Image 1: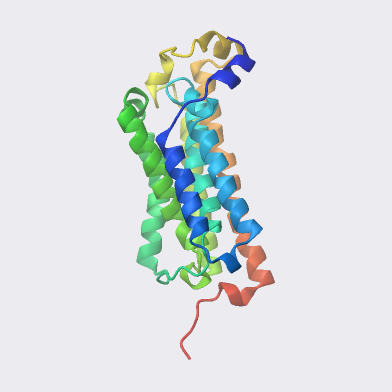
Image 2: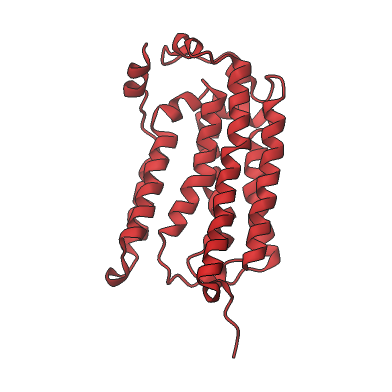
Length: 258
């Protein structure tokens, strides 16, 4: 198999992609016609495209028991990219409760624990061996990622955390993700041992070894993905909060009773 053949043939059907498309269309249809904007449609389209890349493209195929690095890339896309894009495409008129510390901490814990939980060796190996567990993994990452970003990107501004609390929220999440990334990068190949002996369903192992992807190097790349690109997402969120705060400070302040 060549690289071109892999990129052209390693596509697969995933039910979550179909459900994601239906959800995106439903979210856009819920917006009143006069309030529909190109940016809202663009965010929802981008969320769907990233979902397809994560689950139905060769990334999804290689994540399913072939490459730990592809598995990590898939996790980052489902947890840190699809949810914020989808939230930015929602109807801004949705009425939601204002954030409080307990609710925000629960969301923070969900987003951080999603990475740590699914990289416990038993669960990581189970997800590569069982399609049912793998499906639960995909759904849980999307749900926990949406829960995590809700206090930052809730449709109504008054439902979001105040600027400095939101910055601390993202910075501490970045720190937790960095610690896990460093641990994975410098650990022996034991985080997910299933990737040591993959089942070559695609006939692609000779190609992957030709790329120089030994199990040790593969895990190191996966750890670096968790360590560096993940924190770029959190950092971009922090910069976005600061930009909105300086540009429109009144939009970031919770409404006060008269």
